[in-house]
Length: 329
Length: 184
Image (cartoon, rainbow over all chains, first blue to last red; front, side, top):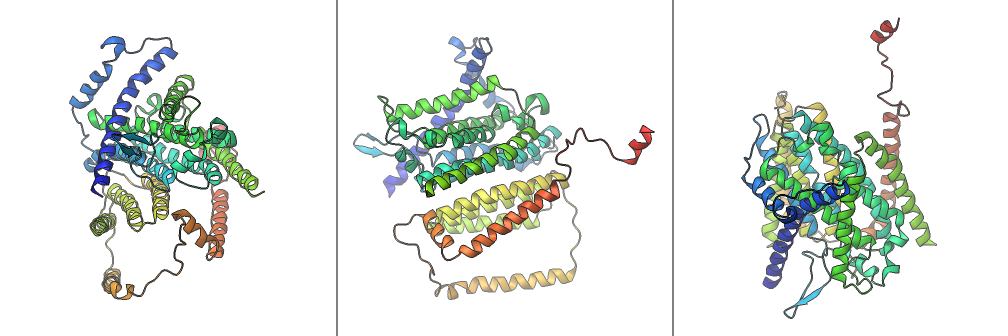
């Protein structure tokens, strides 16, 4: 029992520190990738190839004044960024990050808590994460913030249905809600990947994932060109940094979910060992999100709602129905 | 450990819902409501009902989010809402009711000794399977009735909100009398 608690604490600390560091490194990668796609150089001045830009940004975030506007609701204003960051990492607790491996004669399961309803827990926690932007926007007594909060509620109510329905068809095929069962179902090589059986669900899940992580075609809750910074208008320093870390951690979580559910998870992929395979897949999804950001413009809130409710949701329902018929016959 | 967690969750839940009722700031009221709903799922997790816990989490996160949208429309989020004074009879009635509820709560352990599971979980069934088994055998008809009711509510909602849905709001002409005068 004691060993279990100690192991869990060690895993939690490791996941927290590694993902937080990756989230920070992700900002550098994003700027570089975007720059190359737009034929610029990106950050170049701090360190070799701008690598130390990360440290410079970190110092700036940590030392900046923690500013709270006079009309704001102080308590809620201070809690909101923590909700985003905390829920992003709690969601990661139920995600199996790597295959089991043996270290110093002990078998390590790289998952903090193996729930048999893992996928629902992850999606529910990520959904709860949107309370961060919502509360931040409402508490700061700023009209741009309030607009951001209103858009948060609209985005949330739009994509949530699509996420649930799109993931339902793979759940029906696998017959389990555990992410490890999803992974084991696709153990027989590339032909067993669920993306071949559920291509539509994969596309729908990915689109909803973009809305969930607030990435560019759907980043209307902090759309700089329309509403300053939306919910984050009045935030500065580390509180703003927490929103950022939460967003990047969510991107990584969506990458893991998409790889585990549709792309064969951490099974060995040809000659690649499983651990490397899943890291490659997650990196691809991360890159894909940056790629889309460089290629597509923002869309309006009503366009997002139209897309989710009138196009994606009927498609998802049809997909679930067809899957059900095929499984019954 | 479980006892400690139970009392921690209970105290937090009751405290948060008290804030919901007593606070005059709409933001505090709704935030504590959402937090209380999330913490209730903790009680389900303690009882080993993981599936119900997650359903509680997902459903209420969405439901309270919709409530926030209404709160945003009707109230100033950073201000204090002015409330009417409640009449004495209501206070008297509600006070009496709470006293009765308190007595029932403290008497609950005595009654609770006789409670046993009517449909115990089959051996080897996981959490979602156990819920599904009971739902699709014993409680099939209530389940279907609830589904039909939700469908009716959805269609009614579409009809209520659907007037002029085929026209774009931004291109719609102003139909107030003033604009007609301008045209003439």
